[in-house]
Length: 284
Length: 315
Image (cartoon, rainbow over all chains, first blue to last red; front, side, top):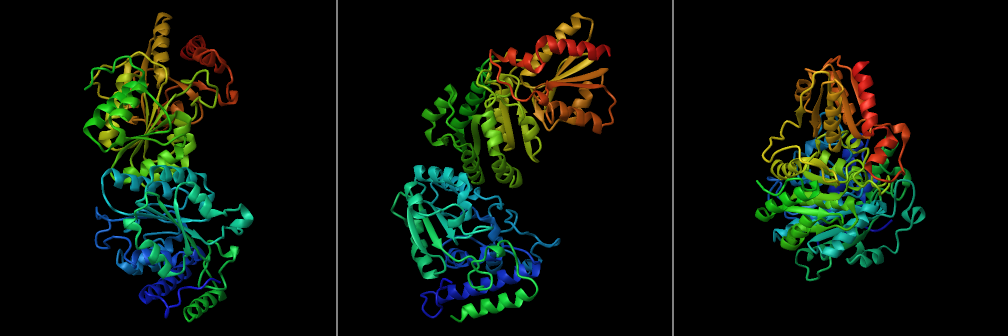
């Protein structure tokens, strides 16, 4: 199990604390709904916390459609509960909505939905959000806006051919106002990526497409802030891709790194086990 | 209004109008999947910031175009018809239809437009497939005047639409300034049988009606140029005829004829209907030698249509 940022050692203990809170909120959302991709959420919690609570993204919870906002495109749409938890925590909508996740009276379901305040796109069909992000970044350049566009891709999503069509496009047009983050948790639905169809050497692939590549521990908020902190004022003309090495199910030992937990929420006796694992992970 | 839209290739009329508007509106953006045209060259040279060559990557053209549209751009994505439609269905379904992001897909080569290029380049399923999606409109263009009008309204109305352009230059049916909002027009009245055509087959329907009239059958013609069908207008257009026949250069299941059948059936109409098009049982065709040869192979050659319709009218 990869280490989360040790709270006491982090330069930003508030972000570590937020990550813990968001892990709890996400897990409880999925437990209550008895559905949701818990492990896919757990691998990208620190990434989302750095972007939103770390102040990288300029957004306004009171005015989700604010013209001057940065755009975050969650291309791996199955991590929607994590994003919904963050948006609720920031005040984009009432956190009580999380209790109605995937319920008839709720405003959202398992995969990402553009109608939710603070959400830019519908996602769930993989490989599409990256292109939307590229188009938004290109529009910002055309309009001479210095807004940032950030997109988060799953590593399993990289099997979609359209990802590489977009990568070629972004590399050619040198869209350095676009930040692409790959949640590299090494797991797909049924197996590890390197058993399925090898993705490595992943950094070399992105570099060959014309990207500047940063590879970091995606659970280390300090490392995330270090690389994201200068994303808006990069001098390089190359677009930036951050390969964030993560653990699918990070923080919940009984579910982590187990393909069988893809797309599932704990039920029955697993509920308390998952909660206990999570609390224990915070003590490390 | 432009004065240069008479008897032009639909493609040139379409892009010429886009160019004229794009010069005044820098939010008009064209993404081409490595397709050219004289008017497109003007856009590329005169308005380089509004022209993007995506390479032969139609799916990426759709998603990048949708991202641009999310930021307020008015985007055209252009390729050979089968590639901008069938290859990109998932992209169009999610990024446009689900999210209601306006985008204009422009496909050149409706039906057998690329006549001798073989079945990969024939577009024989697009109406059936594209009309299955909510929110998308199909503009099935029958002349250059309409092509220019569709270009202009695509920008003004910010719709999600698929424009199917014929590659062949067809004679103009309409005068500049024609009101295309109804989605269909009666080009010729007829009491015995009303022929409903779309695209190039509207021209075939006009020729057929002329011949039928000489044989004592009073045949009218409707040009159905937009789907979903304007049902009240269609019912009104056919109500004076005893029978209805549809003509399309498209496989029969789910095509324009099916759309007409749905309208008639839903309205409780008892008008006899005959659909003429490509029987799906015939499969794909590797016959060459021009569009007429292909029509004959599939059973929709000019004489075959006349024979079918005489039998239908008298039956």
